[in-house]
Amino acid sequence: MIPTLATLHFLDPVRLLSRAHMSWDGDPQYPVNHPRLHGLSPPRAPDYLDLHRCTVHPQRDNDAPWLRPRHERRETPIVNDTYFSTEHELLRQTFRHFVETEIAPFVHDWEEAGLFPRDLYRKAAGIGLLNLGYPEEYGGIPADLLAQVVAWEEVARAGSGGLGASLGSLHIALPPIVSHGTTEQKTRFLPSVLSGERIAALAVTEPGGGSDVAGITTRARREDDVFVVDGAKTFITSGVRADQFTVAVRTGDSGHGGISVLIIEADSAGFTRSGPLKKMGWWASDTAELSFDGCRVPADNLIGMPGRGFPLIMENFQKERLQMAVVANITAELALTASLIHATERHTFGKPLASRQVIRHKLVEMATKVEISRQYTYRVADQMNRGQDQVKEVSMAKLFATETSDFVTDAAVQVFGGFGYMREYLVERLYRDNRVLSIGGGTTEIMKEIIAKHIL
Image (tube, rainbow, N blue to C red):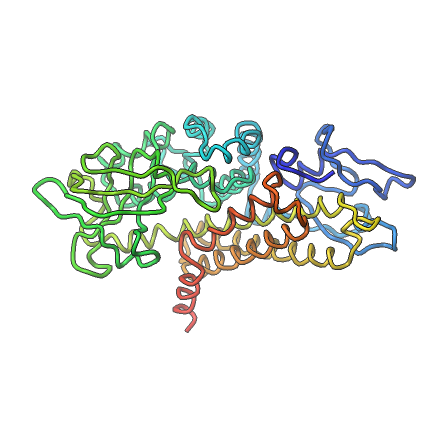
């Protein structure tokens, strides 16, 4: 049996493999029919599988399997307790259960519909998934950055990049308010978003700008106690449904010194938005174009000082890039796990795919890249959590993680062959969703330029 979207709702390597039935022939150490993803048994791992462990072993002989029993091999944990505490893992269990029950069973339908229910924001806030890491006085739950990494990982394991992007759009829209907003702004714009009642989005990218943040042309001119905004934004995640936008505008001369940041509410006069844009991937994310035509915004909605928006935006990018690296790693991990299962299930020319050296070596290369990328991303997150400047390192993490997910998702489709091209199969969606990860939050080319400035 080949794993499909119906059987791989929640493709965590541990739970998926540990819940699978095994068939044995003779010596129980050697499975003849590998994990079958139907008739799920209680969640107990077979003898040769351990919690959060995944290794590839050489074939014992021409007919023996490539998965050795536990006592014959050394294992490397996927989740490294160097960085994550018991409290982090308890959070992981809570979030994982929520995703398994409230998201994963419905992902396929939401992807096809191009939208997920708005009520999911409230549900996610109710268990702390949405408001983790924000000030308690505004409805948040104080937590360190590694706890937020746990949350990002578990949402990403649902296998829908678009859902994760829109559900988490507040994480790039609210930090400027938290860090630089006034008490009045925090009181007005944080609690309702952190409770899931309102949706917040970030609006920086323009139709003619792309990565050139310093070159934005959306103009905000001051008239008494309001700013009058004219211009447009594009590719805005949650743009169709968001109630408030954190918007980069030009209030001064050309260049980065003339940029400011405003909070613009969706019911503002002069504001309009498009319907959902049709995209290659991230189908469950409502992405829109925004238009400002004499849009009147209270001057009190200015975040920080006029003309000081550029460093505020750059500061915001660092956490976004870490999140993109985390999502890329989970995307690659899901594709790897699906490939491992498919390679043991799929028979060609009378033998399992994984009995072919070329396939085993491809899986080894995939697994190696995933593990290296994951551990480096964790290290960068840990250093950021300690308050260390990691501009170069987080750019490296995003660069390497997205290059890894590019390689692994492409290789996964190749391992699946024709099945990998079918929308019924998870790897097809992972392949599409992955493509934007090396574009959003700073392109691969921009990451290389940032790194170059630090090393040359």
